[in-house]
Amino acid sequence: MLDTVQNVYLIVMWVTLSITFLVLLNRIWAPARRRVHNDVIGWQISVIGTIYAVMIGFMLFVVWTNFQTAETTADNEANSLVNLFRTADGLPAAQRDAIHIAASNYAHTVLTQEWPTMSRDQPAHHAQIFIRQLWAITTHTPAEDFSQETNLHQAMAELSNLTEHRRVRILESMTKMPTILWSVLVIGGMIVIAVCCLIGTENVVLHYTLIFALSLLISLALVATADLDRPFQGSVHVSNYAFVRAQNTMLHPETIPK
Image (cartoon, rainbow, N blue to C red):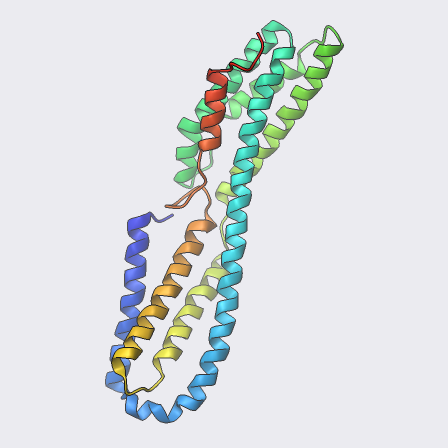
């Protein structure tokens, strides 16, 4: 996805093209000659503007909801990892230490390798080896008493949740809004601006100001939609703070009994 500087360039380009279109239109078709059509253009602007506002508002709502879902998925994955790390204290010493090491390596790999890989819009599978290790350790852990059996069931549940959240996170990092929807938003924005430019008015400065404001608003909405559409890429992305906290908890587990 685009970074902040590229987003600014897109906004400037969109606004510049809109103003340029109005300048060329005024030279080809003078505002005084267009005023006689304002009664027809006026109600068309209302209809087209309302339709486009509904579309772009709905798209923004959808991508923002998806962004929050991706954030929750990453948080849940980190929480499940910490819960597994802590639950392992109730298992036999050998399995406990093995789970602690694998869980710590998992957090470190997600932070140092998978998050940068996802930011480049590439599939992240670096930490998959530690998931396999955790499953191998947990499924082969003997329960010597009722307490260990209870902790083993809890560890299995947390590992299952961790695996599920990881799978969803990777899928969310690769999904994006279909091209057809982007075509609707971009072409719709061009139509709205073009129709607004058709208005004939004696106050040319005011007209330019309104077109500037409208094109700026539409371009900001499109850029925001693009950034939120890819929750792990771009200038606005899901933070890795949950895994940073998880790693700190596993490095300094003061609350975990020895």
